[in-house]
Image (cartoon, rainbow, N blue to C red; front, side, top):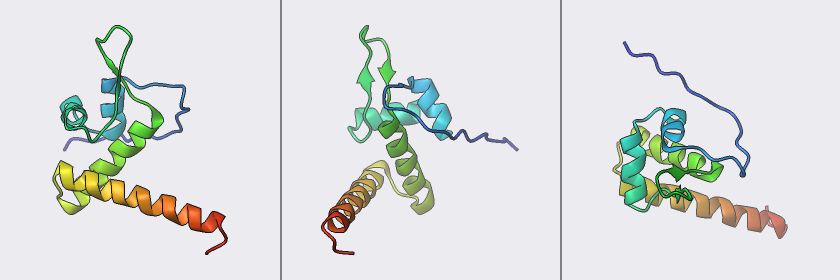
Length: 103
């Protein structure tokens, strides 16, 4: 059976991952990332030469969240994006409530 190595660590926002590095960090094929970038549910910035994408730490976190929802719930990419977006919004709202003293 194929053994998968999971990479973990902390990215600083100034660091950028290539398409291949992001795919490897998520344990997916680069095509998985490309499809989600083209669908507009995963970010990625074109490099100066426009020959490669660069991904930030937020993109890695979102990609891992999308993948988790897709795998855990057998969801398609659009449903996964909606779930991740709603989860992010709930987190932001809870943080605002906490900051206002409503716990």
